[in-house]
Image (tube, rainbow, N blue to C red; front, side, top):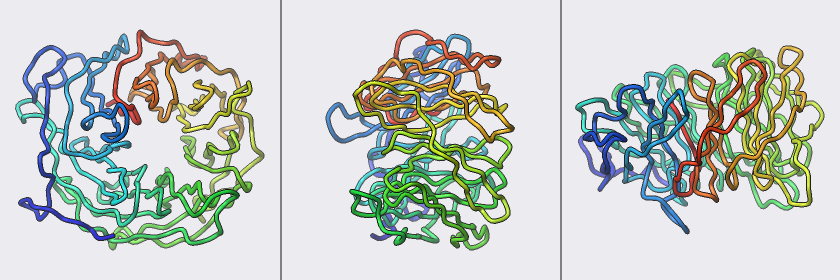
Length: 383
């Protein structure tokens, strides 16, 4: 698949993109969010039953967790995952479709007219489901799920995206049991910035790459294979940078992995329980870890719960504490507020976002108000 460009002053653009709606207090676009509230971006799907029309714009009260709508940014197809540039001025979205793309959006500010689509670039693969901005702010990495590949795009000073500089495909090892090929589900940068790790559900493997930050190319340096049939989906690092927690979608387990910053290699431990019980199948989706490294939370689709773990031994161990209902159906993604005291769950099948207060001392979760309606909620990104 090509890099696909359209019209626009910088050689590409999005046709028909526009901001719709007013701020939660009735203010004009560009005044979002009102004083005292914080921005919340919502990824969704624009195709299929109950689909939305673009990226949801919302605001949340950091004291109460209450969410209010601020409109929609249209012009992005299936923006199911979102990530922010380190400078906060640009938002990036996957376009999860057969001809995969990634889109850059200027977040805007008061008096700017609101968020604006800067343009999109082809990922060279199909159905991108995850992306990460390199901490240096110069490169965007995306994972193409259906085609099992990882793409690299340069980020221009404006926040817009340049032409793709690399594409690596996970051609080996062979696919796991019952799977037809590789399925790259996540791409994440290690805390030491030394490696890019790609989690592939299709062939039960986590790949470690070095990113050439001058050329924007990836070189594989290590490969970690999980148990056959595990279906690794998402990896989240402990703040120490020497351990990470892997959610295995297909066998309903989690694994603590030791990470070697020198080689980029992961060493997985024994599979651990997600705390889900009953006859219904459950599919872990994603971990989040508190910034002090004391607790981890796991989203369980099917069981529709959040598992709370205590992190022990400086990150080397997870101790299961409990599970609590998520208050929605099929929690696809979790995120913590910048202050770390609110947890947001995007519940894909119930078209909702639920919010929990995090007790910083005990890690306990307390639901905050009613679920917020959001069509096919796939990602919640609080700022």
